[in-house]
Length: 288
Ligand SMILES: Nc1ncnc2c1ncn2[C@@H]1O[C@H](COP(=O)(O)OP(=O)(O)OP(=O)(O)O)[C@@H](O)[C@H]1O
Image (cartoon, rainbow, N blue to C red; front, side):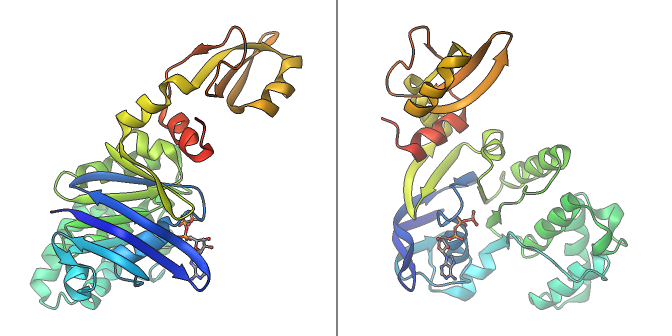
């Protein structure tokens, strides 16, 4: 069970957006990371049957992706640009979307909407107009919409972009609790979003899977490549030219740097504990 993707390719004309993607995604929270243009949205739109692959095989819980009706019944999607009727109230917007998704029985629709509103902590705001919601509340409404049919797979694209830190944390926690009983795929280029929630991740780069596996394994792989130490100001330029500088913070007369490198970058440098961001940079920069 779960999602199995074999040799998936997607071309837009001459542009190759996905190039031989192989991936297995099981229950729980799965992070899809990658720089802008890597192909994340394309992959998610294929998984939700909004666009068709050029070639390759995908099964979701044993159902082939070509069986669009069944796939749509088991997947929920929160796109990057989620917007609904601004003058509707929260309840009206969900009611309308529920009718569109085929939940015709009035009593059942009411029960489902009330449950979803509670799930995303918006029940107190049911009468508030959509246009009056904060960014985080709109995103939560988007999740309520994606959960209407109680999908086995929930796919969310860049959900925390534009949210303030408190809203972002709340949103991540909510996704974490939803992942207890389904697959949640979280696509983002914000590495922090992955750090606190996902056990398994994939990194897409230029249409290809550059890494897939556990967060722990990524950290292990980055272990010997992250260096830290204090350097003098006048050494900074040459360090920047020769190595990937991860961070630099002034400390009185020197600068404390973190550097990604396969060799010791300067005499007093020492290996330091890597973060997911360091692991991500190692993969994307191809440091060996
Ligand atoms: N409809 C389209 N026609 C042509 N090229 C497209 C189309 N949609 C996407 N692309 C291109 O395919 C590549 C992958 O795009 P995609 O939107 O999947 O990447 P992404 O990882 O989601 O990026 P972002 O984080 O910026 O949303 C990009 O080079 C993009 O310009």
